[in-house]
Amino acid sequence: MPGPFVADDRTLISPPTILWCLGVLLASTPALAWEHTSVVWAPDQMPISVHVADDGVPYHPDRCAQSGSCCEDSLPAGYCYEATLRGFEAWEDAQCTEWEINVLGAFDSSTFTIPQDHPNPEDGVNLVTFNGDVQASEPGTLAVTYFSTQGQQAFVLDGEPYTRHISADIVFSDDVEFATQADIENGQCDGAFSFESTMTHEIGHFMGMGHSCDDEAEGHPPCTDPTLANATMFWAIPPCDQEAVTINDDDIAGITALYGPSASFSCSHQVDEDLVVGVVPFTLNCVVVSNFLDEIASVEWSFGDGGTSTELAAEHEYTEAGTYTIRMSVEGEREACGPDGWLNDVERVGYVRACDVPAAVFELEQVDALSYQTRNDSDVSVYGCISDIQWDVFAGDDTSGERIGDPIKAWEPILEFPEAGTYTVVMSLGGIAGTGGAKVTLEVGDRAASGCRTVPTTGGMLAVGLLALATRRRRR
Ligand SMILES: [Zn+2]
Image (cartoon, rainbow, N blue to C red; front, side):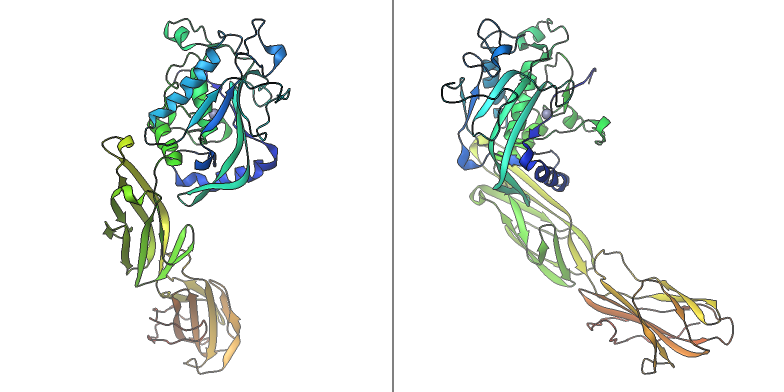
């Protein structure tokens, strides 16, 4: 995109809830290709009424032109209202979505007073206002969308809770030269910014959309995907922009996720929203969850180990330990969504933790006559399957001998033997699938010994420290 870029806005949430919102944003971003603000309109809030302070009652009376218009100074009276209508219409390109907007004129000032600094997003009145003082948020800001929530849940999307708006206000800056769409198309833009592109973008925020990409200079990742870079919800626009007036595929995907038919899934063995844990072999049962089940024409599951299913209620057996990603792809039929219907893909990366009995393997490496460094070669490839470890040392060539010292809970401790002699060293690994152990018997202190290596035992389902050792092999 050609420069110079100007930060178009900052979407602000009112102070009482700002920390909460940031927390949710951090937690929710990885799940989706697009970004949401996590604050949305719930179905029972439709139609959403929006007042446009153009003609009539001004947002900021002393900033309104002499004509009585409170549209931006650089724009003709009435244009702001018309452009607001077109901005909402632009989002109707997301045909598969269901939301209702009621765009109204300015409200009656005898019943409602607009504060001087900026509108109050907690007053229950949704405003679009102009000639506002938004420069305080960041230099170069074209407009700001203020919104607020009390944290009441609107719906859950792909496991993430979205909360409902109290109300939202869009405020256009007083310090920006805006151009009409006609002037831009006629080449008479003269470095001004597209009012309608800005409007479409702010309406996206109003509906719950975040930025497709954000300012790299503020530490956000580079925007390498052209679909994201060309989205209306990209964080900035160049002067005289003509593109962001209409929404693109990323914008459509993002708003369709919020207001379109959608599906998710839930599975057995779930320990939290993002994780199921099982001991192999185990059968996982997963089911499509949707308010639109009757529209679903097909579903495809991929369980991450090559297994698939096309059932609404799917069943899959995991036989190998591993961390697996589940993908579910649903196709729905709805006339308003066009001949291809609607599509919903849900992917949960690393969702399945399939654990096997820990395979314990270790080596001992002599440091000096009576001390040995342990080398733990146990399989830790599946994160989270091992939760405990213990080393025990016994006198003699079996675990029936006298216990030497206290059990040691460390991954690779140095073992100190009290004197020369025969010892048996046991390492136990505990986890959800049970306990695995390995042991080695060695002669300590007679001469410089070579390393000892164990092989894992199998199948133990015992508590840590109580071992059933299937393999007893001594190596030097
Ligand atoms: Zn923005």
